[in-house]
Length: 371
Image (cartoon, rainbow, N blue to C red; front, top):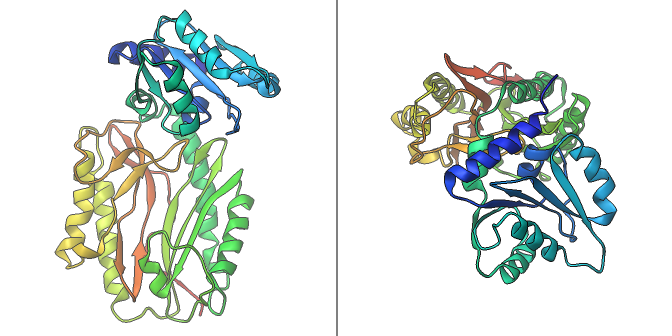
């Protein structure tokens, strides 16, 4: 009989808590709650809170109107759904769950995404407790993906790659960034995603802003265009960036792009178990700096990806954490010349025992589209 993966995750959470001297986790609607239970709780003004003690069964304190749906998702798990009615105090129920576990005066890991309004109420009713960020525990659980998670990431990466393969079929010159962003939003969903998470279309000088919001600028012949797109399928995220040019590249752009492509390849080649995250960043950054563009690479090389678009591990200078097989993250160096143009290449990779497995497989060369 197949084991419920969420039951396994809850068991690992208990062990991780005990090993780190944390008495319980308090998790509101978030990727952490979904990871542990499979319940994608809506982020309401009514408190929903999962209490996971180091010893004993977990309990989900949930608004009464949400309880039937929550129980459907919790079926097969040793998680009690404790509903609260409109006139009840949910924090008192959380306090009761912690009292039962002997954790009310202990060290409590609070979800990083929990609203401050809820945290302040918890602190007021649990004055003897010590509060810390739940990610001190949950990052260790979620950072290394299991085989099913890797395949979920591979499926959603294949979906976003289908969008990239269709970029050349769109009309670019003479249209606004917003026009193209709307086309891409629709294409992301048509390619099989459940939802679009983001669409970045940065043309000409706007491409020098890594998180540019698509606006009314009309794309012109010879414009480089940075296209960064991602969505979510069955809970897991895609994220890829490709850079194209409308017709003939502007002066100096082809040479800049060649440096960038070499740097992105070097970053992917550096990925292996035991390699420091910072070393992957350096593999990209050193190539770009050697070409005279060090000051124009203005962000980290990558971020973890899974149930969230950005999660651990972060591929950045100063992060000396060693990579491990199963970690999934982006490798996305960029070069940005203010007032002129920018370029970025991004693949999601998984660290394996033999190096990087690229989940994005579309061509990384400079894409030329009709002007």
